[in-house]
Image (cartoon, rainbow, N blue to C red; front, side, top):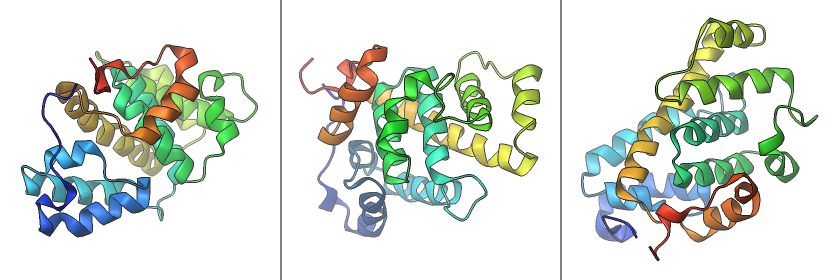
Length: 199
């Protein structure tokens, strides 16, 4: 059960545009933002940061950025964000078949060597203590340039904030990410338990 209840989406009218942006991305306003709106300036700043990092005009595919966010969240243990990032990856164009193979990314032909290097980087960067070392970076740089590495790390760090926020408040999972988590992530041990209404 969430430690703080989300406020209704219309509780802060000046956030309507920001909330609409997240409805476009996910199909709903996340409970994390509905809780965060107690400090509207944080929601606005987070919306701006999200737009800058997840900019579809960047050199990294938006779907891959969401997968990077998933692996960073997996490293941190935030099951709320693991499910959310996969929902967003699907909306950003990652096929359901590829999402279904997320646990097998190291061997699945659906993932390229460049993607494997990027996802391993996200997993290492999201770990505490940080697991990025010379080998991880050397492998990453075989496939990606420095600007792309910065863009990828932005996605990892954006979710670092969300991982802390949602796990600290046990933010309740919405229906669609919970269902996806149960179907796709459950075989890897995902339960969403911390983020369910029933303790």
